[in-house]
Image 1 (tube, rainbow, N blue to C red):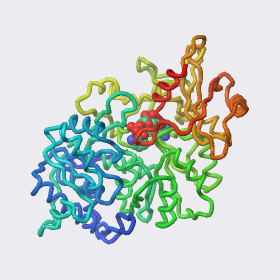
Image 2: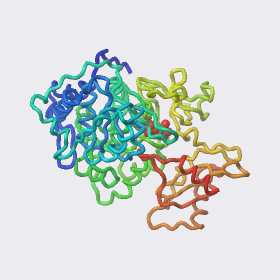
Image 3: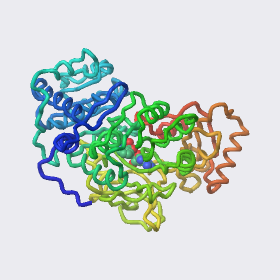
Image 4: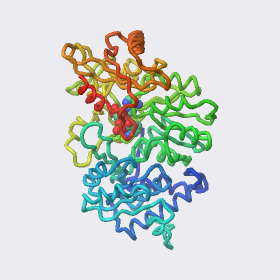
Length: 513
Ligand code: 3UK
């Protein structure tokens, strides 16, 4: 996409300081409950924290700093400050508990952490197992240590560290659906590249847009959608304290939000709660993290008039690499490669397969996978192509259609069945709120298709409904794909980033057979 960044580059100078020097300091940058920061306000917070990091906490260029907080304005400032001072931000999801914090602390060899004052207990407990962690500094409270240090005179200015465009500035951990999480390293130039590819060429938001969404800022989906994309164009981010469907509707209504980033599940949940609410300020809605079923696209468009923009991204790729601009969407398809990226479908040996044939998705572009000291690198990147672990097919028009995670394909009596396709068919039935479809062991067929279904409020799951759902699937897709077993459950297992944990469902199915 013709990206050429100068060899010396600090992405925060581009994303933030540029707005001040070019006269946009008074524009709104951050909105949260009872708070509004202009770009100048944000820049000053960032400078003060950067001074604390380098003058009081001994951080030098290249040091890694762990961040632990929800989606708060101070989390945004801390992130930017670490990077501006030449450090490497290692953000963690606020919901992680002691046991889950030890791994990233050790793996990234963390000596210094900045932590929301309400979340220090688990980090301190985890730190007891990690002798290298020398210092935890709390922020966000009236009496917090970081704010006290920030108030020192002369701290309002800070010159961005002289970093290279390919210096690492972020280590993002994958949510680890299987095995230990992997740390993915990203460069200063990557923060800009996702804005200049996906942001500029697909999303096409403007400086007057207001962004919000539910993904945690420690998840690159949230970092890009809620912080980097708006900042690149001088727009505002709205950060709701909680990010359930009701909180998102509140934020959209109250702050006239126009751009939303969230997952398909959340769009379905929002639809159930829209009665009497005014979300007419919305104009751009991005869905990522999981496949967007056509039924959800149709329901959202019917209700709001807005075509949901599906896009596949990955922590390894930093952000979305396949997704169509608003005027080129094909409902049910993830879309076309984002300008700057190439994508293709290959077989097990890495050879191209013909259009229309399912195979492994391979992608390359300005961002890509660099695992932190992890032998799994060699499995993810083959001959320069990132193998995301998804099974896709490309049609003759170059559109990409999601099938399943490659290791989630169900093989039943010799048929390959993609669980998400069965889920999409089930979701078109009015009784179904959420569902997950996996293979359950079966002596005759190897596996059978088993569906775990969360019903809508007030619906009773009985044998008649099982039969009705099975018939519904058979009427919608090839009959051999229907779920031979259906279990009604209260909730589905989800990762910290809100993704369905199919491997956990598989384990349940294993135990039940
Ligand atoms: C799946 C999708 C179908 C797919 C992410 C946007 O999800 C993100 O990153 P993760 O590392 O997971 C990556 C995997 O999630 N996936 C994501 N989006 C879609 N499957 N359709 C989609 N639209 O299996 C992929 O390999 O948690 C998403 C931006 C940044 C991200 N990190």
